[in-house]
Length: 145
Image (cartoon, one colour):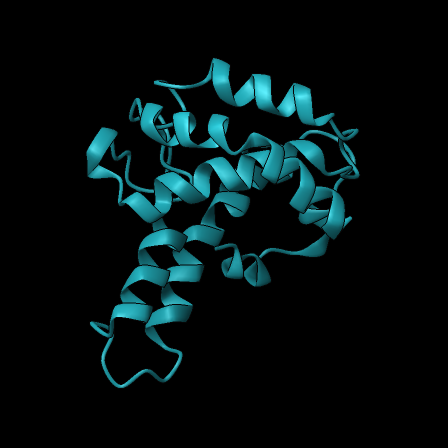
């Protein structure tokens, strides 16, 4: 889903402090860059189901249920289901991971954040599914670390 980050410099990706407005714009460009990569990866036809789903997930995983996300400002069910699912998984992973600019959160803190943002950042039905499976998220994250 973040394949487009290959187009963003390591200085921005690994910056220990807050990003400037210009750096945030460059960071958000990874979505469009990822879509372009999928379009040019050599599939005979972008309508191929795998390529179509990949492009939808890449292009919509930063959209927000309330319409305040990016790249296109999609809202609610306008956001492809794959993007709504990836949004929860991506945020969970980002919250749990230590980054140069932040400490890692515990599973409980990440879980609470996602529940609090149901209906604004995240699709409430996806959050319900996440809540039912939250122990599995913790297990998978711990096994990957």
